[in-house]
Length: 183
Image (tube, rainbow, N blue to C red; front, side, top):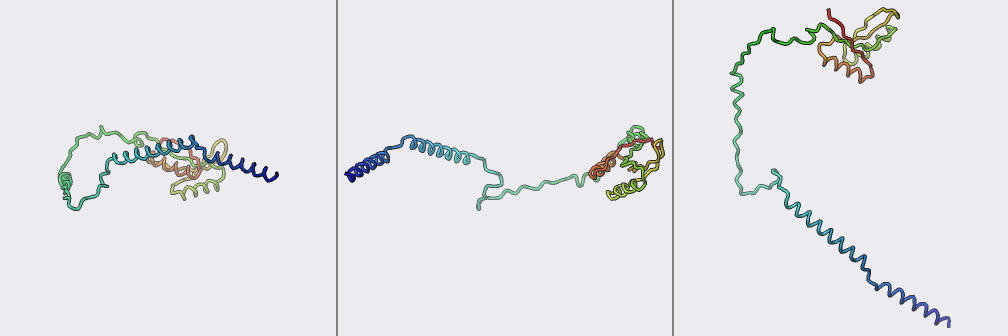
């Protein structure tokens, strides 16, 4: 009897498993066909896009039998014409604008430090000399005592002053713009 029960349970298991294996799965198959259709459509659209792109001017292969077009090189006449021309301008010197530095009567200096000890001022002067600048040390006396100022300038133009200021800023040296009357 034990054998007959075991055989019955095995036959039940085998019929249950067999029926599940042969059942069609409709939801998974439809999704696969849908994805395949979308992928095919995208591939065809991409290929049509590539066909409609314009060809690059330099990428077209030259045919062996096609004649080449020789374009004449442009001729420039200004090499001969310009040296032979003369331009005369009638301007009075009074009409010309005066340079800012000459007309303003002011000098621009940069103070790169003010120290109580001369040795500290000389150290800063050495740092500025290594940057390629031309500093000077001024000895001043005031109500608070003796001070040694390290000064750059006077500068001929604002661009020269800005260049010196950027060099000092790169070395973490703060500067102070000083404006003095020349003379």
